[in-house]
Length: 214
Image 1 (cartoon, rainbow, N blue to C red):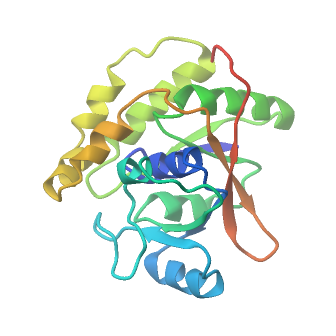
Image 2: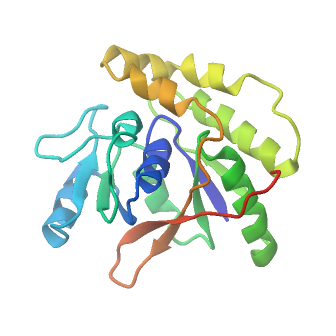
C-alpha cells in the first residue's frame, strides 16, 4: 500500500474538501482529462490548477484555504493538478492508496497501520514533488513515518514546508495563504482513500479512522 503526499497543494486540498462535506473527488491526470470528465459528470464541480492558478472555465482552483471557507455538503468534485492527481493516477493498481499531508498526519498514519495489518504489506510513502523540488513532501513524509512508528518528529516540519522552494513559488503568484494553511499539523481526521470504479474513474472517498495516539 502507499500514502501519496502532495502537501502544496493537492493532498491538502483533497483533505479539506472532504472536511467541508464533499462526498467524492474524481481525480484527473491533467486539465484536458478534467474537462472531458466534466462533460460526463456535469453535476461535479470542476476544480484544479495550471501553473498554480485556476484554468479558464473552472469553478475553483486548487486552494485549500479557499475550500476551507466553502460549504461543500453533498457536492462532488473533479480535481486536476500538476502533480498530485497525476501521481495518484499512476498508483491506481496498488492494493491501497491513501492521501496524506500535514493536516491529516496522525490520522493517515493510524489508517495506514490498520490497513497494513489487514493487507500484510509494506507501507510506501510517495512524495509527489514538482519542478521546484519535493522538500516539503519529503518533510511531511518524515512526519507521517514518525507517526506510523510512534516516535517524535526530529525536525520542524511546518517551517520546512513554509520555507520550501514550492512555497516561495506559490507566494510569488499570490497564494501564500495556502502555504500557511497547508503547513498546519493534525487538524483533520479525514483520510482519503482511492477507489477505482468499474467505469474507469479514479474516485477518492473519505475514511475517518477512530481516534488514536498515532
